[in-house]
Figure 1 (cartoon, rainbow, N blue to C red):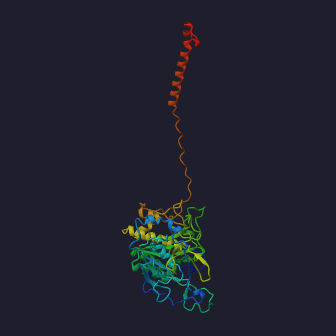
Figure 2 (cartoon, one colour):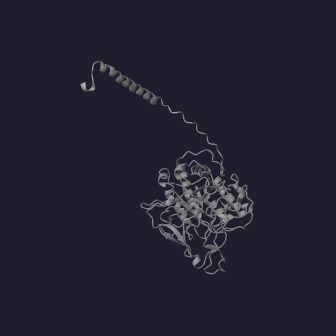
Length: 461
């Protein structure tokens, strides 16, 4: 079974929808040593070369995704100082804007330390979380004073040793990364002392993974990190155009109150363990759900995930996209890049409110998000993350359940008829004016007999 950015696993079939089973803590794997479960090799020929990047041409401009979060205001309250954020990904390349990068180990290449990023993915994720601020440059990490712990767990450019024997130089590598090593990486990050773990990768299955040993270990690992080590675990919701092509249906308009756990076609892990992790959907620049987000009853929140700018894994600058080994350009888009925005905000919250537990941090993030009209939906969860609100708002004691609210027919109150107009002042004025006019008229008429008595005419006056 392979877990990664572009590869899925499992056999298609009818899924028996259910929530995760009770977790067996006895299945918790060791986190040490950080080494691949198998002997591995880099792909051969051109397809084994590390991806190239596209440098950003707008270094001075604040990226739209960052601007929507109003980070300048959020930084008045917290910058993530002292928070260790683990990035379990394709590795994080050394970069001058990640001055306190910790090498946490490598489950892909024997002898690696987690600081090689051939896929140009983990470095982008890490930059979104914790890249330091630079005068004159618009881009910055969400938590610029946080530290990054890099653990490489997957790569599309590696494969099990010997897998390339029957391949031509033009063939793509199989990719490498296992659910079992993901579980070990989570355990390792928690034992390192990470306060937040970001997992921008998924394992998708079209059959319930409850009975598979690797998933039992994954469940034990997320529970261990979240409960026993008090770590906030943030993970991507998955992309329908990559590993999770089957996707899941959204709410049925004819059955608005239907339990979405009963309609699952694709199990997305580790998001499936929603009691212990916060899964993140993607929104575009207009705040609408991205078309590639895999909906699910586990989705908790959303963040920008399209046309992202972050650190360049090949230079000391920043980048807007990468080229694969066939020369195809790919902008940085996906739930993989929405997740680190939320992980960065989690680091800000942990810095400002150190007394909060991991569960309380997740609840605060969800409660202060910009909620959709129905309160929650399987594409963006409780809504778009709001860093300023997460750092300043009062939080309600309890969130509504992760269930879309059906449309309701509500009889609006009939407005009371307006009171009749008060015309008293007008009437008094009219009556008074009429009386005065009448008196003047009568006075004028009464003056004629008097003038005749004295023989006066107008010409005599």
